[in-house]
Length: 236
Image (cartoon, rainbow, N blue to C red):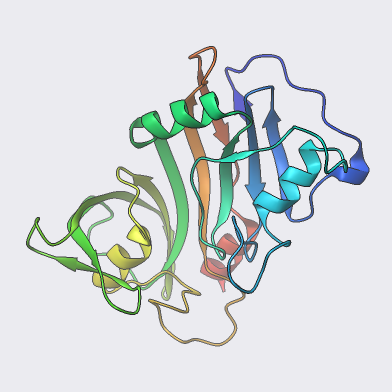
């Protein structure tokens, strides 16, 4: 779903539509998609082609590798996080979006283990990274980067809580670390959470984002629903 937008761009034929990605909006400057859990944003040492970046480059090139059309990475989502990613379609759009990124409004949904004592609040800490690339909170501002996470409990059961989260800063693994340190790790989190059988995926979803369009400077909001699995897990 998209609000306050300009005219949509005509998409290439269906045979070029990328697997694991739903295109929410496209014009000459930006491409906004909803990524499934399990798909990398960009390649790593083991995976080159099955990434959002590779699939969307193929999409904008309409299968012609000699095409000058390409996409540019503005930000990333972790492999197992689903939800909205904004890509640029030219260097100017990329530069503008990255410069303005921290000021854009971002909302997530998550299912966490347990019940939070406060049903609404803001978690603030300084995040640092250890030698095995795991993030953790430190008290000294000189040793970490400021991380600020707002949350509101939408629903809860005996085992789980469904949260709406405002991401005030965009640090690596910020949401996952903050709720682990609250004693309520994100369900399905293999790195920071509990090892529990039967949870199908990391229950973290980038649900909405409000940006300024890089060319028109118009405010645009893109939204998705709470994944059905999140509700069924809370109900289980």
